Image (cartoon, rainbow, N blue to C red):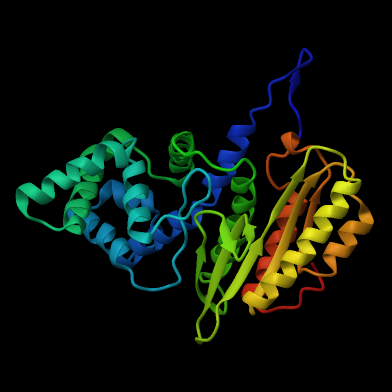
Length: 327
């Protein structure tokens, strides 16, 4: 990631770069809604054109269809640190984000009040509210094209990130995993041989070991789920004995995980300067994929393009059950 210096002062806007990456991973969710809208109107038009012209009843049908979709192959939507929203909440947030800020803090209490006053279900109250907002204020918004919605999503994700206290590096690694999953979904329209993917909202504890980022892949044909486990290790100092200690620890952890989690893939992320090449090779021989970012942890702001491509191909090899030798 290029540092932006002006008159010897670093003015790099790292947060914008990171949030933009998260926002881009919301595009498959937008395109999924667009496909729903096209199915309802029976015409190949953009989501923006449909929402700007549709009668209110059709908007109600669209929002309701998104809420009640029972298929497993649905795209993901997530908060500012990459935690996946449950599907109905994702629908509520995405439609609400296009029309107003802070839907949880400002709109959700109004929804609860509607339920009490009119004795309606939460689903009915939310669908009717979202449709009414879109219908009433679309002339003010003027565009629902992805380029416009993307800017709104960046702002909403920044707001959600400010309200969340989380681990420093976990969001970047989770963002890379989500990007790889969303890339596969955007190309294939599903998750390959898996029915759905569930990404852990926080660190996963397996025995005495903590996994920073994890996902469970549930197969279409039944049987045991596949656990994708991604421990992250950072070190301010420059390798040396620390790298040997971590190598020993991670190999011990992998052995323990092997006894407790039979079906698994393990990816290790190391963020440290001058980590021993021999130690990296040793770790690599025990796991499925390793990423080493040769830098101080305070210089790490997410996966670069080459690393993301490697992650995309690795995830593709799992979902599509293809040969991983080309990664």
